[in-house]
Image (cartoon, rainbow, N blue to C red):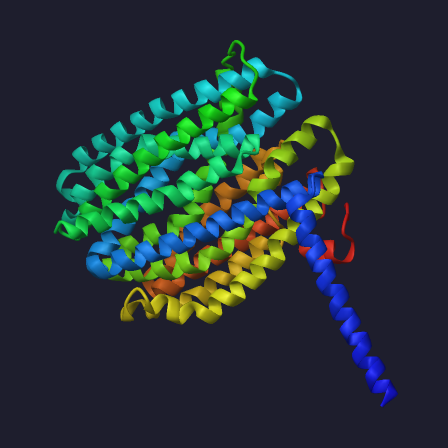
Length: 468
């Protein structure tokens, strides 16, 4: 009896200690002012914003799918994917260059170049975005009747989004480069989908047809309004935190930094959207909508990767500029662990809830449930080495990172073209997972050989600050 009481007491003591430790960790996260807790707060904020965005997007996509039907919804998904690709290319990689160059200018005291990049980078982005939109119109006009009828009007309308979509992308990079996480993330990931949903609710209420071109018109309003609001918020922060003075415009340095990063960004876009674009060629619009719903549901796992990378990227760059390798090692190990374990938890939860979540879109959308099981393999493979692309880009290895992503993006497209006609949606999911795993293996090899960092989750478990 005494032994049982002692065992119960010990268990209660351990539970109390665990609870007190959890409370203390939460308090440190909220109140702590050291480097590690600031990064944890930034990562938690980024993840929270992406989760809130996912909830809003999920609600809006369910509403759109039910109001528009599978075919019109599939057309809208394809057209908006084209905007994502074109908008993500038109700024020539300046979004990621902001994350690398702004901390570098800050650490080295080059405030004239910092001011010039903040102002000139955004002006250049709008000009480039407008030029790319013009090229898009020229391509549509030259293709003529070869563009399928349901896609023609939505595509013409969607190109209006490109300059301001690119501007929002670059302003996101400014916010992350300066550590202004709320300004960086809330407008594109919360404000824009909220405005889109509100615009569609108004359109439905006044009796406009629930077709793809109506949804694209709502996206135009949401994209433009979001870019303008974010621009005003950034200008307010610049006036408060950046000392006044002259601007120096180092266009050659901007482009020398951004163009390899453009290749990386383009390949990331291809990796994220190649499957959807290929199945749009071989499958029906309804099947495109089903695959989109399943893949975007499972891709919620990637929010963890994005959150940790967004929080840590500017610190990677700053520590590299200082040459502070001693501080870099534990930061990298933390980033790997913060990426992998929450990704595992998120993947488990999403697979458990996948069927009922897909059924919200409509009964036919549950056909995509098996796709989620294939995609999760690639997503967890990527998570097992942490935010490696952010690390390599901020540490001067952007050319090798670009080469890796060119190879894996080509692999993704090639295998999709081979597998989709034979296996349909499952073939697209296999191609995506394969490409992500190959990219993870190659990034690991570069980090180990060029930076001396062993970034595998399996190494960080056994040797937290392991170096090759």
